[in-house]
Amino acid sequence: MGKALIVGCGGVAGVAIHKCCQNSEVFEEIMIASRTKSKCDRLKEELEGKTKTIIHTAQVDADNVEDLVKLIKLFKPNVVLNLALPYQDLSIMDACLETKTHYIDTANYEPLDTAKFEYKWQWEYKEKFEKAGIMALLGSGFDPGVTGVFSAYALKHEFDEINYIDILDCNGGDHGYPFATNFNPEINIREVSANGSYWEAGHWVETKPMEIKREYDFKGVGKKDMYLLHHEELESLAINITGIKRIRFFMTFGQSYLTHLKCLENVGMTSIDPIEFEGKQIVPLQFLKEVLPDPASLGPRTVGKTNIGCIFKGKKDGKDKTYYLYNICDHQECYKEVGSQAISYTTGVPAMIGTMLVMNGTWSGKGVFNIEEFDPDPFMEELNKWGLPWEENHNPVLVD
Image 1 (cartoon, rainbow, N blue to C red):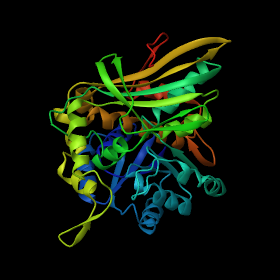
Image 2 (image 1 turned 180 degrees about the horizontal axis):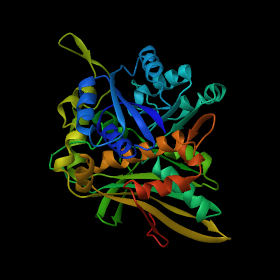
Image 3 (image 1 turned 180 degrees about the vertical axis):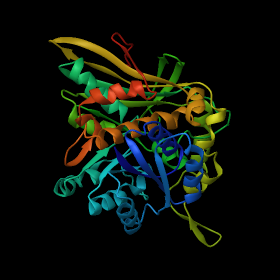
Image 4 (image 1 turned 120 degrees about the vertical axis):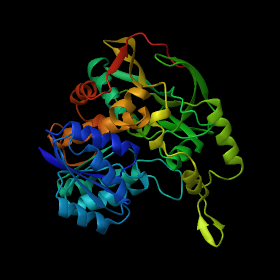
């Protein structure tokens, strides 16, 4: 049906590429492009002979718009799926604008010099994309991504209005390391060490990092401590979901992770301010990333499950109602299928699905869109088909 250019070749990209190759009726050709072409070539070698999808590889600097434009013009894809770093969102969007190519990503733009998670930079592209006659689909991962689809689905089928949303992200997996991150260490640590915030009564309420803690009993995992963080989908859901009074995001962390993170913070290793080392400017957090285990290497040693979903409270036919939509994913089952742990799997599968729905015209438009702005039903159907079946609970335990 079409061609997709996939920028990035990390853990999430590996899953998305495996899934594109399983879905060769839609993804007739793909190009894997990364700064390190040898990683792309290894993945191509692994997949060729197992799929009808034609696989190409290329070297590209995702910070360089000119490089990206040349590659897009050479390959002529229907869509560009951005699975590079969030710092590179805008350069890839610029290249898509210049070539009039649809754009999809899984996480919002972050400036290199500050841990700031906002959609404002990408939303400013709305008019440009409209004039170019193309669309950008923002946040087609799990959170953001599936959590937005879950919210749109709940509003469409279960509620007249949704007043409260609690997004709960639980990783019950154990990789055996004293300290490691389940996705890009630099992005992960920036996210969890930043101030938390939630949306309530029309404004943001800011909290200190890890200030608000709750315990929740997750199906398939058990009781876990979870902490309130800021997360980008709160920003778009507050605008796009009718009746919202409060949205919060919680993520689980084990004590070993928190102890190590606090120690690293105390000695300055999580800082994003450059320092001089042996005559060179380095960023401590970027150096730390290089000495920590590669998240893509965690698959064979991670056991346990994830449970990620949304608890909704609102009204239907004038009556109060609660509803819980979630997915449970097994780390080892993911590794058996695509050689990945579940964190990469739960992001890579929705990335493929969102790209497919744009490529086949199920979702279409001109401009910049968050995922909850589209009909959720096709996406929900594909989740069940491609490895992330969802479950529902009409009488969930609420978070206080």
